[in-house]
Length: 251
Ligand code: PXP
Image 1: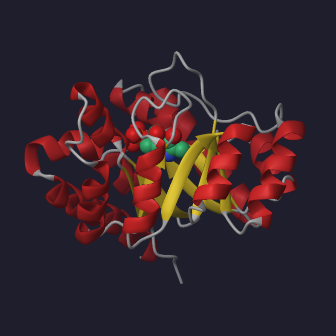
Image 2: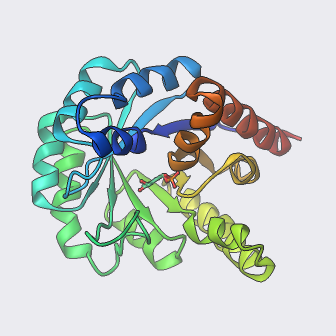
């Protein structure tokens, strides 16, 4: 039986637009509710250290008001862990964060940060928050995630999506192999496998055919497309694309 593929909608960039003018419009919590109504299985929000989009009060309002699981993306720092322990989201995804970057450009270096990650993982695990590590599909990173007792990893799909955007067939093939093999390895080690970054309708449909992956987290493309056709329609089209991809595995 192939697992259902969940869609987590990342609403960060609704907050980006709000913050461009100050005030409270458009409201990311309203976007979260619309996305859920349209078929999202959960909502993802990244509380960055510089609070450039989502803010602390958004997290509190999301937790209080949405009817589906909240996945809080955050840097692996003691400040952020304390915030998570207070907010108690359903899940936390630990991501690397550099202030100068435009978005989360690479995976977390679980191998290099193993010693500092271990106590944070223990605290979050003990609080009953499902922790995931946002890592490249690299065997050493995946094995370390399992050793750190992360229940979940999220595979960074950015390099694959970049290669697709540039129509670089060699890189596409290499990145796809890395993701597919990484997903298989992670599942064999008992990890739940998610994926995200840079996905659009087409790439989401393609990656939906990997049966080990049970959740996709998608933001920038959905919020951008929503400008043209509305968030409800965009989420529905994404859901349909993922279902088409998933149906290929079942055959
Ligand atoms: N997953 C993680 C862990 C992320 O950091 C991001 C970007 O915030 C996403 C998924 C979504 O990426 P995108 O906005 O490119 O769809």
